[in-house]
Amino acid sequence: MIALIHYLFEILFWIIFIDIILSWVIAIQRPRWAYHPIVQLIHEISSRILRPFRRFMDRIGLRTGPIDFSPILAMLALRLVEMILIRILFNIGIR
Image 1 (cartoon, rainbow, N blue to C red):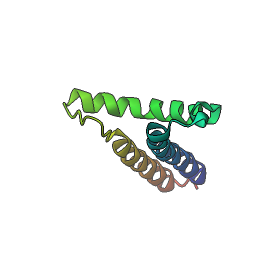
Image 2 (cartoon, rainbow, N blue to C red):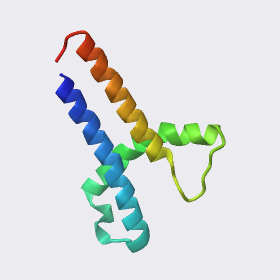
Image 3 (tube, rainbow, N blue to C red):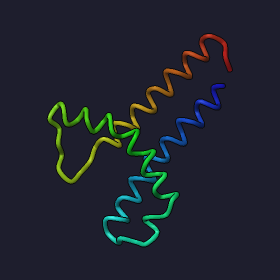
Image 4 (tube, helix red, strand yellow):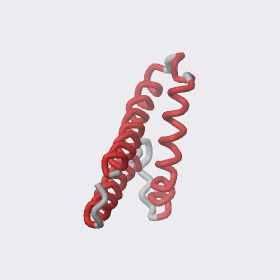
């Protein structure tokens, strides 16, 4: 169970990271593969994860212009939630 949770959060972490890299490449080059279904799926999953963090940053007035720091907050939050869940499961004896 702990390994499953770890892999799930690892996949989410990498989806966000890949979306960041893809956004840079797409912004610079505008490649044709930017509309590939896999690229669109990565962007859709990532945007659903990042949306609450973007809203939070807007609410507290941290609009940063062209640089989006919400992926950093999301990645940190994912790691924190993962650590908390794993620690809880480990403490109650689920391995």
